[in-house]
Length: 304
Image (cartoon, rainbow, N blue to C red; front, side, top):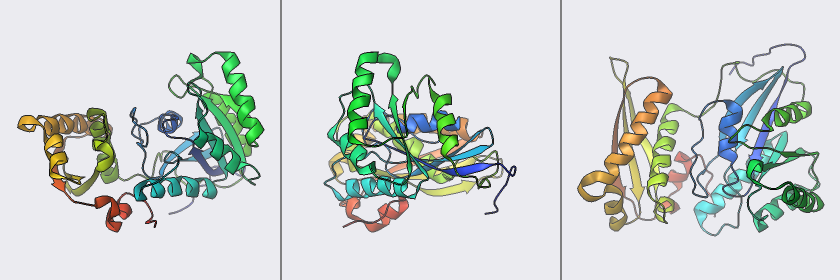
């Protein structure tokens, strides 16, 4: 890839967004980039691998890395997700610890704050969803985490409303190194269309199934065929671990699968600005979460 320099005073660097599950990192990434590149659901652990989003602010190019939530991991998939999050933080120039201000500070958030202490990287503490939290609570939470960690800045933001995001952009760009831009000005993300399609379907899947089922599944786009009329044929597979799960996904008369497919197709057509022919199949693959190939397809490293 050819570097794209904008001016002699340009800045560029990587900014890792980290935090406990459901802190709002994906919502924040989409808001900063100005386009939906990360899926958002009410479920914790929605983000499974690192996503890159690119945004411009003044003469600076910010390369954001949205990471999985950091928590106490037990299963192999969970350990791989947490490892991906810490790797994203270690590789970045700046780290933003995002905290859900509506909740009590979790043990995971405390661990992250302590883990960042003494880091040579510039670190920013950002409290999210501040529009629905009393000022006194915000101040108390800020003191608690600043006593645990070491942050250059502490900011109050709302990723949903945009409140405080300009201040966050200003603080980030102040810390960025003077480097030429790595991407063209109109570049938004490194996520491929195939991966985006998988993620959109996974989002609709998570929103439909509210219990344990989403974490026992993975979704892969196995075929992407450009058609002569400008449309695209997309074939995906939802992998589950048991026959009983397959029946739940398909639903009575195929209604569950049809609903997921319809919602995913409509959003993909909007994002891609063209007609999409989406075909989704459900297959049982016992122990897929211990299959090395599935991790590579998700952009995760195999961990023991």
